[in-house]
Length: 252
Length: 260
Image 1 (tube, each protein chain N blue to C red):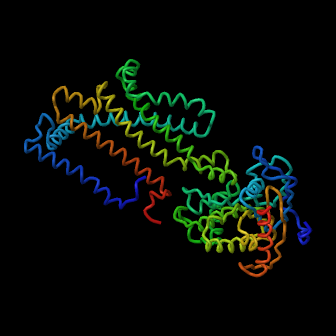
Image 2 (cartoon, rainbow over the protein chains, first blue to last red):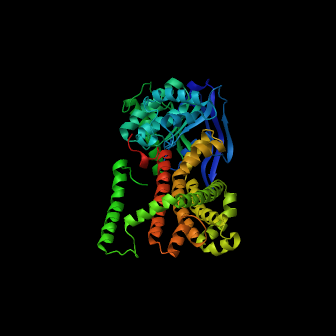
Image 3 (cartoon, chains in turn green, cyan):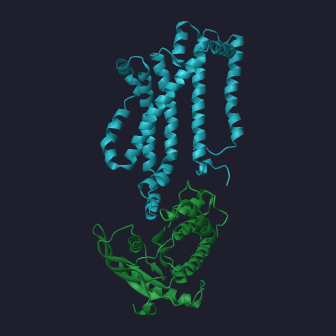
């Protein structure tokens, strides 16, 4: 944790303590210790099957650990604890875009308030005039924007992102990375992004954790000042370091 | 799902063939190729239509048949929907009842006619029972299939956003099952008419089927043909209403979107 000294005084958003998860005989996560400060952008990288999605599902409460503890700090009034953005947009096809965003305020606000806040948030993700469209007429990137608006409308303390950009084409992907980055800088939630794209992790995250075979193999701070761009020499330096680590594992 | 079409144009095109058939039929009748005791000309059937309209017999029989059809449909349909819903949502209910229902389903419901006549005589209950039983299965099976086919990822999404059971049912599960429920409804409507015709033909003292059987006794072949045509038109009407409902409630579905 020495690399994280600059965050020592910050309050933790959540903390994994000796977390275990098994599926049958196979141990997917073995004794994970991970503390993430409030407002930090954490990226989790690893090969398929390394346990990164499992870790995210545990964080979001979609799955329970077989051992250890997950401690989440309480959130302030009007905030929801954790929201998840999935790889698929998972919009309700039978609800218009505005209604889909309002789903994010289920049980938190009355209908009128939910719809007006949804309208404002759609503008923030660049879909100002699409309130009354059906999801079926949107492009893949636009659907993910709606899903992002739905996740953000409850002002979550933690936003868990499970490869939300994985299915998008390269250009849409870069657009979405910039959108994510600017929304995060404005709203200051804690972001946990699972990805297999090293350059995406370096562009967005304050800290990158590499998972390998259910253990944390690398934990580094990305110290590049923001705003960041793809393909700068500093980014290349971090990319080399992380890729070297991932590929070393491959040879071993 | 039918492809979206330029509705007015498509509706007109659908009626070209029936009109051609009627014209051909009339021509062949007048030429003497089709004799009156095999199939009366469309004009003769139309004359019978006017005759029965004037006496009021036609309206009365259509009214009785429509009442039987709709009541039977409402009873069988709501039981089928209710059980489909219960079995789609609860594994306990499904394990308890599905095997039994599948066994009953494999008995053709028209095979029960002798038993039903013994039970109810030829009263209204007999016809309502048969229609309800016939309509029950397509609606039950398709409601169940629809609910089981709802995308589990959407259900998980609903849960993570804090939807309770009620909200989940109303916002996610029922809308997701709706296309399949409509399919069941349209099958059910077809079976509804089929069952009613058979039941009215065999055991009734009123209704369209009875009217046709009476006419056969007196060799009024024009009235027999008239009854058959009215069944066809009523069946088409019921299907059109179901389709209109479907279009209205499935606006979100890509198959029903005519433009952005």
